[in-house]
Length: 193
Image (tube, rainbow, N blue to C red; front, side, top):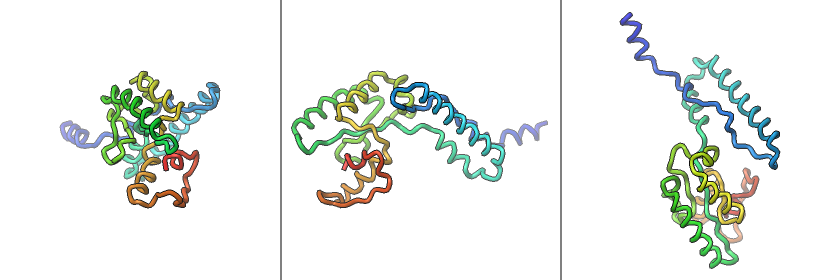
């Protein structure tokens, strides 16, 4: 019995147990909640089927378990301030006002340290994502929705912001530059540039 206890104590727990399949899939389809709910249910069902398929052959693909766990976690909430070339003074004033509102939520979001312009913000709370925003901070959601609607902020994934930041930082993105973006839909990186 003691030998069995020792074996169980040294056997690592299944990392897949940390994956939570949820019905809380953020989907928007032109205010048609029945379509959104149907799509969310289909996505959740697909997640379940993929996880079950992996679990049945887990010993063959054990090296993929940490990757699957990582993929199952929601992306952090990210957004950026938009800059306006036309009316710079209006843009600066608008950004100062919204920055004050964002600073009120500094326990949840802050500027990323590698952006010298301090225009890109990311959640500093591991539980804060697009899907959990309403539950964790309705007031921050209100600020983001209002200012995304009026064009002051862009809610964009960090991975989509980084190429433009890198091109600007390297001096390769200037007026008249030509860039081929093979992931150009819906156009947020183009607007950022």
